[in-house]
Length: 117
Image (cartoon, rainbow, N blue to C red; front, side, top):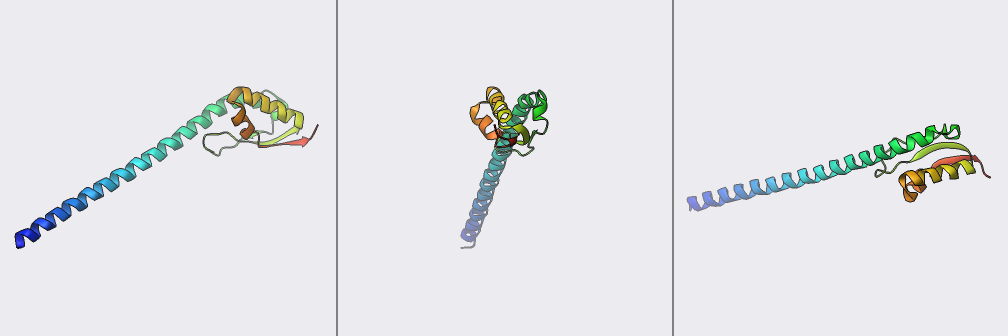
């Protein structure tokens, strides 16, 4: 009877260790995926920033517009002011050519115009 209990205890320890290893592997995998996604978002943000920075530097009307440092799913958000609605639309058009219409529409949401035309 003692050997049977000993065998059951050994099997229970083995199962516990196996379940622990499976848990650790699953957690490690998920952490790795999250870190990879975060890095991908950061890379996308940096790529867009490199394209957008020259656009913002090209016109004094955009001097108050900055790229937000927040990583929002890899999408760039601009914040600041432009002199008029016409400048905002012109900026939106330049951004659309550089990063695509959907990303441009999102990026421009933090930009306000001093006066509307």
